[in-house]
Length: 63
Image 1 (cartoon, rainbow, N blue to C red):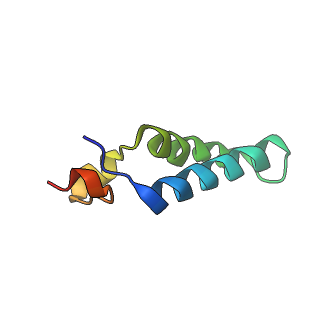
Image 2 (cartoon, rainbow, N blue to C red):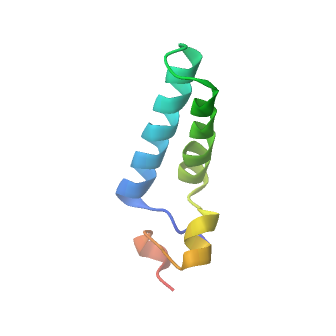
Protein backbone atom coordinates (compact mmCIF):
# COMPACT_ATOMS: atom_id res chain seq x y z
CA UNK A 1 0.00 0.00 0.00
CA UNK A 2 2.95 2.39 0.57
CA UNK A 3 3.98 4.30 -2.54
CA UNK A 4 6.25 7.02 -1.08
CA UNK A 5 9.74 6.01 -0.02
CA UNK A 6 13.27 7.13 0.65
CA UNK A 7 14.36 10.56 -0.51
CA UNK A 8 10.81 11.38 -1.63
CA UNK A 9 9.53 10.81 1.90
CA UNK A 10 12.22 12.95 3.55
CA UNK A 11 11.69 15.76 1.03
CA UNK A 12 7.92 15.76 1.59
CA UNK A 13 8.30 15.92 5.37
CA UNK A 14 10.93 18.68 5.17
CA UNK A 15 8.92 20.82 2.73
CA UNK A 16 5.72 20.34 4.71
CA UNK A 17 7.37 21.33 7.98
CA UNK A 18 9.09 24.31 6.36
CA UNK A 19 5.82 25.65 4.94
CA UNK A 20 4.02 25.22 8.26
CA UNK A 21 6.81 26.93 10.24
CA UNK A 22 6.97 29.83 7.80
CA UNK A 23 3.20 30.21 8.06
CA UNK A 24 3.33 30.17 11.86
CA UNK A 25 6.06 32.83 11.83
CA UNK A 26 4.02 35.02 9.49
CA UNK A 27 6.65 34.92 6.76
CA UNK A 28 4.16 33.57 4.22
CA UNK A 29 0.40 33.72 3.96
CA UNK A 30 -2.32 31.24 4.76
CA UNK A 31 -1.47 29.20 1.66
CA UNK A 32 1.46 27.79 3.64
CA UNK A 33 -1.06 25.61 5.43
CA UNK A 34 -0.97 23.46 2.32
CA UNK A 35 2.25 22.16 3.87
CA UNK A 36 -0.02 19.74 5.71
CA UNK A 37 -0.44 17.75 2.49
CA UNK A 38 3.22 16.85 1.83
CA UNK A 39 3.81 16.39 5.58
CA UNK A 40 0.98 13.88 5.91
CA UNK A 41 1.79 12.02 2.70
CA UNK A 42 5.39 11.71 3.85
CA UNK A 43 4.42 10.49 7.31
CA UNK A 44 1.88 7.91 6.14
CA UNK A 45 4.00 6.95 3.10
CA UNK A 46 1.03 7.08 0.75
CA UNK A 47 0.19 9.64 -1.94
CA UNK A 48 -3.25 9.39 -3.57
CA UNK A 49 -2.02 11.28 -6.65
CA UNK A 50 0.81 8.76 -7.11
CA UNK A 51 -1.80 5.99 -6.98
CA UNK A 52 -3.89 7.66 -9.69
CA UNK A 53 -0.96 8.16 -12.08
CA UNK A 54 0.73 4.86 -11.24
CA UNK A 55 3.91 6.16 -9.58
CA UNK A 56 5.71 4.36 -6.78
CA UNK A 57 8.96 5.52 -5.16
CA UNK A 58 8.92 2.89 -2.41
CA UNK A 59 11.43 0.18 -3.35
CA UNK A 60 9.80 -2.42 -1.08
CA UNK A 61 6.38 -2.19 -2.72
CA UNK A 62 7.05 -2.31 -6.44
CA UNK A 63 3.91 -3.90 -7.89
